[in-house]
Image (cartoon, rainbow, N blue to C red; front, side):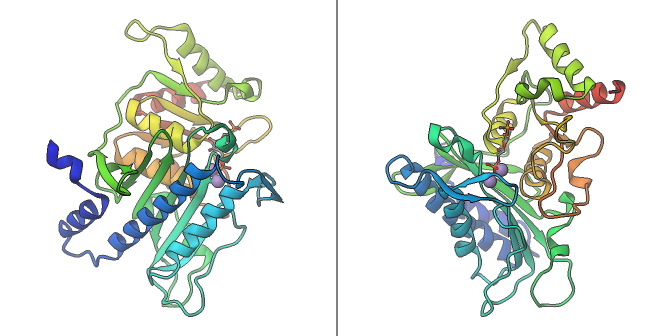
Length: 336
Ligand code: AHG
Ligand code: MN
Ligand code: MN
C-alpha cells in the first residue's frame, strides 16, 4: 500500500503506455502537459481570494453569460500549455465561439482537444469547488493541415481520452484513456499529482440524487414523478439524499465516487437543458461509462449523439447504472 502513495501521474501514464506497444507516446505527452496546466490553474484558483482576480470582465461569453476573469485565465493557460507540443490539429473551448487553430509556425498533430476551462464559475466567489474538463479525439479530416470543425464534432464514443480536474478541498485530476478511471490528488507541498483513486468503479446503484430543484415546475412529468418516487420511498430502509453543488464537474465527481445520479434535464424554458455536449457531457459520460456507469439524454446514450454545432446543449442523466435506467423508465412512461 505504501508504494501506491508514490505512484505519480507521470509514472502512471508512462507505465500505462508500456502496456500498449502500439502507443507512440503522444497521448502520454498530452496527458502530462494537461497535468502541468492543471497545476498552474489550480495555483491561480487557490489565489483567487487573495489577488484582485475575481470579478466580471464586463464581457459575456458565447452563451450570453457573464464571464469571470478566472475563466479567461484558465482558457488562455490551457491554450498556451497545449498549442506547442505538435500533437493537436485543432482545439475548441467553451469560452470561444469558433474552433481554435494552432499558431502558424507550430507542427500539426493528429489529435483534437476540446475543453471547458473552468466549470462552475458562478461558484468562484463562494470558495465552492470548480473544475476543468477535457476531451481528446483523433482527427478525422484528411491530410496533415489544420484541423476542421468536423474534427471537433465527433460522437463521444470516439474519444481516446477524457478527464477533469476539481479544484476543491484538494485538487484532484481524474482521467481515463478508455481502460480504467484513475484519480490523482495534488500534493501541494511538492507539486505532484499522486495516485489516490486506483481503477475507480461507480457503485451500481446509489442513494443520492443531484438536480437543480428550483426548476421543478418546468420539468417534464416523468422527471417530477421520478423525484417524487425517490422522496416518497425508502431504499434499504433509507431515503435518497439530495446534493447539488452547481458545478457539474464536482457533482459528477461525487456521483462517480459515491454513486447515485446527476441530472440536468431539458425543461419548458430550455428544451435541451443547459450543459454542453462536447465540452461537458461527452467527457463526463466517457469517464462515468469507463467506470461502469451510464449517461443518457433520457432516450439516447450521450456518447452516441452526433454533435451538430460546437456549443450545442443536451439534457443529461448520468451516474450509477440502476439509477439512470430507472429515470429513463419514468421519462418513457409519462407523457407531458
Ligand atoms: P460553466 O461555469 O462552465 O458555465 O458551467 C456551469 C454549469 C455546470 O457546471 C453546472 O452543473 C450548471 O451550470 C449549474 O446550472 P444551474 O445554476 O442552472 O443549476
Ligand atoms: Mn461548464
Ligand atoms: Mn466554463
